[in-house]
Image 1 (cartoon, rainbow, N blue to C red):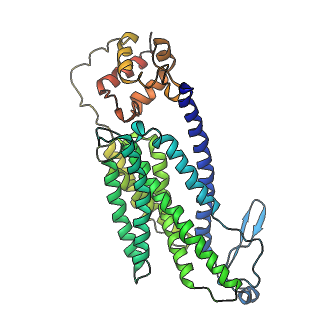
Image 2 (image 1 turned 30 degrees about the vertical axis):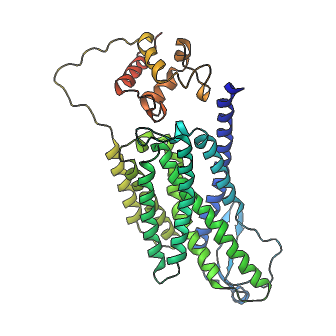
Image 3 (image 1 turned 180 degrees about the horizontal axis):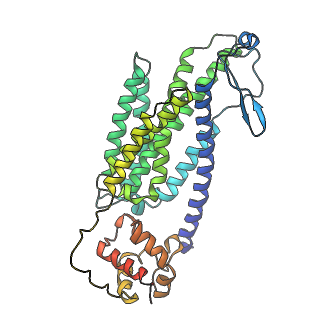
Length: 399
């Protein structure tokens, strides 16, 4: 039964990741749509609509049909019985994301959370520290919004303080966890705040407004102001969070010695690009924002580029033939401890020459090209050993 655990966890990982992507698309799609809609409405020309309290409308065509969404500035003449609430998407995204984080990272803290070259800690400490990031991130962010959000110029103050906190949290995470885990934890911290905004502020505020309307009372405008503020924050958080969720596939970002700066720069670029689209919805085409974002991304790409060997006048020596007997000791020392009959991580075994031969492509991809394996380089594979594996594969992966 114990031998099946990695296989079961792989299936849990697959299904939870799939579900997380599905509900995440639903949440982000709804969020982006309403931000676009809110910024694209025009004052109605029809006096009947004005008399009904419609403050903005839009005509659109999609799928062969015409749509006419309308936004009421106050309560509609009759409160509809079937009023759709947009909250299950946010809650489902967080729940599936946390479940995936638990299965992949918290249950495998020694493998995924800890890099002893960065910071040596026990798995229990790593798990508690990761959870503390999620809780503390929300507490600090929410406190900033509560204290400064309703002051004159509060939006700028909140934005600056949140930026300072994210910078500090990113630096700490990248000096505490493995690079891959640090990127994900920062994204999970921001994603937790996004879902908490919906749970603690946006939906409760909307419920209070509707309750006041049904009671014939004038709603307190502060609820709408707070919900709007938190919704705006969520739309700026979205692209940085999406990058952190994808970053585990691109080791050149999280394995860099200054990975904290890499993450911050890429998140900054995504915010600038998002700002372009927010202004575009309002009819303002400011290309300075996406241009700055692209320049930052290009700068990061150049910064992370591997060093090229200096040209040499002397002819390169002919490459020695690398056989199975040359690479099998490397794999036995660096890889087989996680890929054997007792612990076949990812359902892959590398404890025999036949198994190594069958997985030659994966070995080359993961250990030589991507350099994601061994995880966090826990076994200390050297660049020379990676080069030997690559030479063996390029020569035909001979037995």
